[in-house]
Image 1 (cartoon, rainbow, N blue to C red):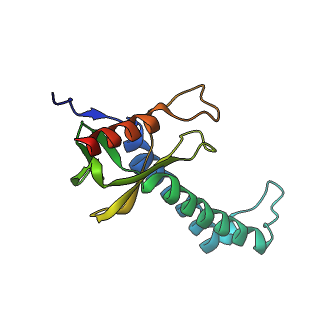
Image 2: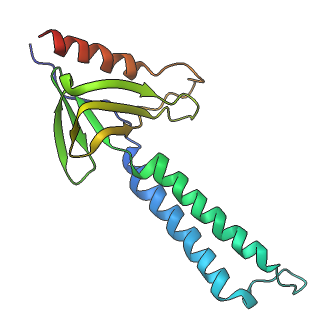
Length: 161
């Protein structure tokens, strides 16, 4: 019996990967660049200009924030699963990876979205590992997301066939 293909990544993946990340990086970037280039136009209500080191601190904050967003949002993939295959998409291209190729499944419980990392035995078109955001659970604290054990069980089942 073939199991239907089911999504295991959050429907918010597209929002975080493309909308939130692009808007945050672009808007803060425009603000920081305009502050650096037009520094005489940024002053407080008394007319005082901010110290020059403040501008560089804002630039550093933007760079660090952009790296953080890349690490947690832009690299996200959309994942679907059936009884034999993972379907991995970056929204432009979807690849199929046999469940037997999954070497490990781990999650980051320290952040609210519980990012899940799939590590493969063999390199795929998306590399040796991919990261996805499982469906959101509002009251999860530090407990493991059920999709982690679901993938592990599916991998074991596929290896036994």
